Length: 213
Image (tube, rainbow, N blue to C red; front, side):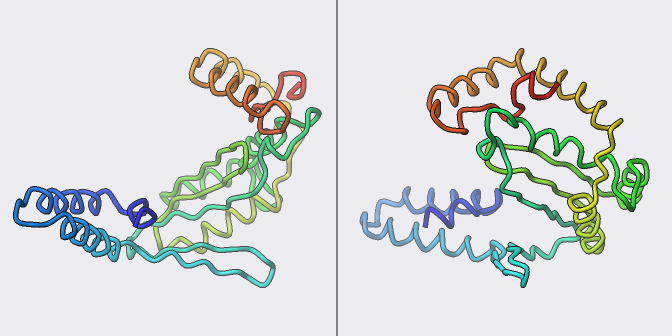
């Protein structure tokens, strides 16, 4: 039941809350009836959630998909590359590569990429965590194949030009300065450093300044 509740939409959660409120406000029901009806309410709402299907392609790539029947879609690539897989010498590499993702490929310049996404009415973004690097696009459902092709091109064919690398080096150093002024970010970095002092999970996502330089 807990797993089903986590997947409910906000509308589903509101409906479930109303059902549970009606159930527990009734004085005519026994405790056993309360539990039965609340479980039934959760299962009924959970049926409205699109089923998640996991498919494994011949090349080993796992694809998780949900058909919500909407006119928009979100597609992303979750890659097991983050600071927990780095060492002291290359800490910050996954985040640096994420910054380089949208600077152009062998097929598309940075401007071409930006214009193509803009003309599609789509949105392209990425983020790095300690365990994963994620690249994703939001687009109209009819443009899903095109969005997948663009993401594949970025992941496989980014040029990683020297000029772009130098420019992003400065961007990341400024980002590090901003993070250092964010007390919440600093506290969590110290928390990881203390809790995981003997493992790579104790390192920051952005890496030390000397590595970026």
